[in-house]
Amino acid sequence: MADTVGKTITCKAAVAWEAGKDLSIEDIEVAPPKAHEVRIQIYYTGVCHTDAYTLSGKDPEGAFPIVLGHEGAGIVESIGEGVTNVKPGDHVVALYTPECKECKFCKSGKTNLCGKIRATQGKGVMPDGTSRFKCKGKDLLHFMGTSTFSQYTVVADISVVAVQQDAPMDRTCLLGCGITTGYGAARITANVEEGSNIAVFGAGCVGLSVVQGAVVQKAGKIIVVDVNPSKEEWSKKFGATDFVNPTQLKDQTIQEKLIEMTDGGCDYTFDCTGNVGVMRAALEACHKGWGQSIIIGVAAAGQEINTRPFQLVTGRVWKGCAFGGVKGRSQLPGLVTDYLEGRLKVDEFITHRKTLPEINPAFEAMKAGDCIRCVVDMKNL
Ligand SMILES: NC(=O)C1=CN([C@@H]2O[C@H](COP(=O)(O)OP(=O)(O)OC[C@H]3O[C@@H](n4cnc5c(N)ncnc54)[C@H](OP(=O)(O)O)[C@@H]3O)[C@@H](O)[C@H]2O)C=CC1
Ligand SMILES: N[C@@H](CCC(=O)N[C@@H](CSC=O)C(=O)NCC(=O)O)C(=O)O
Ligand SMILES: [Zn+2]
Ligand SMILES: [Zn+2]
Image: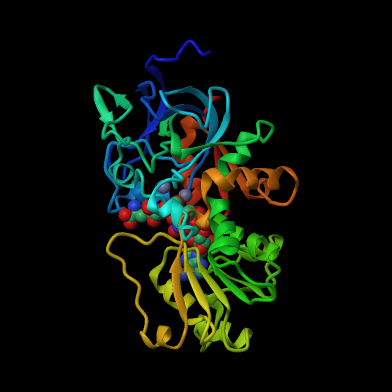
């Protein structure tokens, strides 16, 4: 048993004191887990655009000061009373989409969204309404129920899953968001049928993961649409059949181009940009009568989607998903096995590596066009 059990741990964390400012590396105090909570030593975390989005101040739920980060893997240090799903020493991935297996959502069989702790998670506190983080005498908020930009974090027991011990944590962390989201969107939310023509808007970690999922589903045309020409090579590496740069089109909208390329429109399209104009184009590029467009990208506060209702009257479907529709506790261990057995690409997404003190350069790297995912080492400072 770790000699930290039951005690407050002081460790390093990246604190977001206010919107729009760099993160600050601080010594923070992490309280022991209460009942149905788990304290995790975070080994590695990815940096996702959603962290930057909340830091920017554009997230309607964003509040400060906060410990961001939601793409993390680590080892359980201690557990609170009543925790049965993980034990100290387990290698785990944090789940920003929890799975209680008991609520109306979990039991519906229709969604991976769990309702049990969503209200407190959105307010940045643990299910009992309080925080486990303190810095300079002030409470810090939790983020997405995970807060992986801290060397130790506390999460609800339903927000964590144990995975195979032999899976490297600098890879499994990425299954905590980006890869699972895109892969699940193709395989679970859309459940792309063999031979279907699809278009993926935005070839970042999420979009390339949609491509990877569509390849497994044996899609027909897999067309990637991205404004960054360097993404053509990336897209082809993951199995895309075609690449279109919408800025290079002459006298044609991107939806017209895709309709032309697919004899009437795509069976499935995916927005992986968070741009509401792109979301409209993605819907309108769908085939009349049955085409489905899946919104994955997170749009900023105040942004709204528009289209002519006629687009829906004539059978196109607009839907969306969080975490790819994947139920974390039930399905994430299977993805780790798929990775270990060579069926799921993960290593290929890592273009940058940083340490915790380099978290601000990690955000800069993420925003540059050549970064797919930056993995941050939380232990070796
Ligand atoms: N729903 C969910 O559960 C989740 C949602 N997300 C969201 O998904 C989105 C994608 O994330 P991620 O893959 O990490 O992001 P990236 O920024 O890495 O990828 C987006 C790509 O889209 C390109 N792009 C930007 N504008 C356009 C455009 N107008 N048309 C076509 N391509 C465009 C970008 O090019 P360039 O590099 O030149 O900007 C980039 O290549 C984000 O909004 C993120 O917040 C992420 C995880 C989970
Ligand atoms: N807080 C934002 C919404 C942000 C958002 O859509 N988050 C996604 C995950 S994005 C991961 O990188 C999500 O899980 N949404 C479902 C949920 O219940 O939060 C806002 O208020 O607009
Ligand atoms: Zn994310
Ligand atoms: Zn639930």
